[in-house]
Each structure stands twice: as C-alpha cells, then as structure tokens.
Amino acid sequence: MVWQTFLTLTKELEEMVHQPSSQTRSQRMEYINDLLEKRQKLLSKLPQPSTDEEKAIVQEVKKRDLVINQKMEFLLMDLKDQMRNNKKQKSSKQRYINPYQSVSTYDGMYLDHKK
Image 1 (spheres, helix red, strand yellow):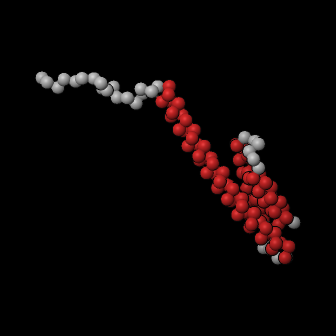
Image 2 (spheres, helix red, strand yellow):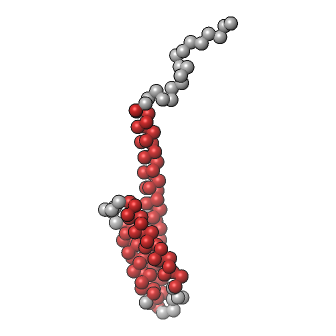
Image 3 (spheres, helix red, strand yellow):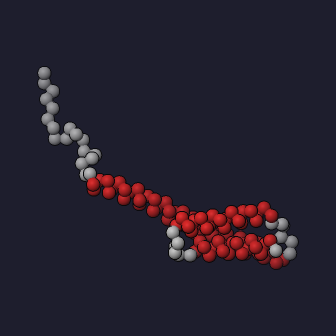
C-alpha cells in the first residue's frame, strides 16, 4: 500500500529530525535529504485517498508534517547561528593574532603642511 509506505517514511523523517545529533551534521542532513527525496518520488505516485483508512493516514501525515517543518526551521536557524558564530570567531581570532592590522599607518605621525 502506497499510503502506508508514505506514512512510514514520514515517521522515519520525524524521528530523524528529533534525534539528538549523534552523527555529524553533514551525515544527518544527507540522511534527511535522502528521506525527503524518497517522499517526493512517492508523492507523485500517490492516488487520491478513497478509503477511510487512507484518509486517516493523510490526516496523520499532515500533523506530522507540521511538526517536521517546525523542527526543520529550528535546525535551519541553529545552522545559521553557528555559521554566524564561526564567522565572528574567525574575525576575532584574526584580530587577536594581529591587533594592529586595522590601525591607520598615519596614526601618531606628525605631518608638516608648511611650505
């Protein structure tokens, strides 16, 4: 049954999104992307829900999708924050290594403008 397979993939995706990051972020994102691609391929093959069981599955998938989308937004915001922090750390590390890099070369120098 195609709807049951779709629900199984949705449940697996929800579990993966809510897992604490035991894997590296790139491995986790690759796995999530694979699940999303599988769901996308299956989505085009889904027939209209005709039975009450299929309609119940559709409702459950909709509920789980909302939770998945919220968690994915949270993960995206976390990733953006970490990227911003890495950029700040890089610039502060550079300033620590060479603190006088941004100081003007004319600072403290006397220039006589008389002719």
